[in-house]
Image (cartoon, rainbow, N blue to C red; front, side, top):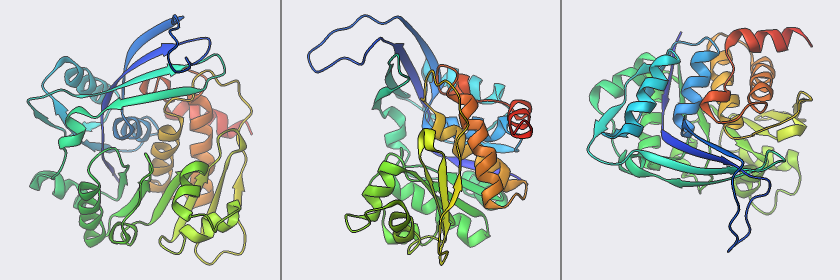
Length: 299
């Protein structure tokens, strides 16, 4: 069993502040650091730390940020299938306030140039059991990766973030769509006025939808279901929510790859996400399998 993640990688510049600055305001940080990040890299590390054999496909620059990211991936046990080109690796400027809320500004760098898949990368998708995708790279690259996976019988998970309109050609290739509540609202449209109607609207295009709700947990709906399956969140004191959604996606993919059913995989991913928000940074906050199992078994 194996997972392949195709997506973005960034170097995160994280600053902790008492309050996120208002327009025109300058504030002094109470701390800061440089951490590996990017939705694709985060999800790949989360899957690997959750115990899955994981490969990551991305486009990195030939700079120190690219080298740091590759070292981070390999250190987490991820098989590195990235390509290196001349250019600047993606970066993200993140501020985190005293209530664990954050703002993120991304400079795409080489992620914006990730517009095709090499033959060997396409073969890696065919050989995998689960493909994990996000939307920080070209949507056409996402669609092509999903089409390769569908033709090979590889299961396709799409985390539709950052949210944008999704072409029907892509949605037709997705097995499980993962979104947060804001993303679900934007994708489902104005007529879907409650959580169930939003999820049901999304299942017109994909067989299964997971909507994450932060401290309220998450919901799952299969096409044709009459009601939502709810999974409660764990009660923890959040320090930094950066990367929590990516931790959820990677851990969910790992659980699914092991053969867990969707509700059980969501519960496993919820535990992983709860652990991640208690630490600062994206990749540095992602828990390992032993920690996740301990939290799951304690309930």
